[in-house]
Image 1 (cartoon, helix red, strand yellow):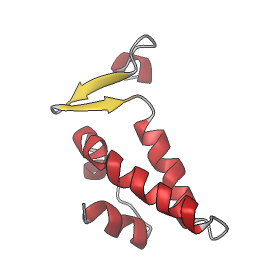
Image 2 (image 1 turned 180 degrees about the vertical axis):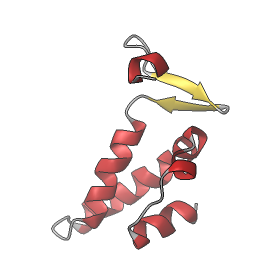
Image 3 (image 1 turned 120 degrees about the vertical axis):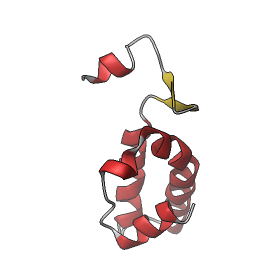
Length: 83
């Protein structure tokens, strides 16, 4: 399956396991995860990244992301498991 088979270009979101998931959710999660791991990131950048991750967790779980992939970073894994 290709990305456009899942969400065609004209759609910005879809329903997965009863949860609305916006296009770009997984990409945003990866960017925020990198921000949390970046020692040069400010406290505010890390706070915002943490908040964005927590808000995205229902969508990521609806997609089944964590059933397939294991988060290796301990801090990020605890954040994802704790919500």
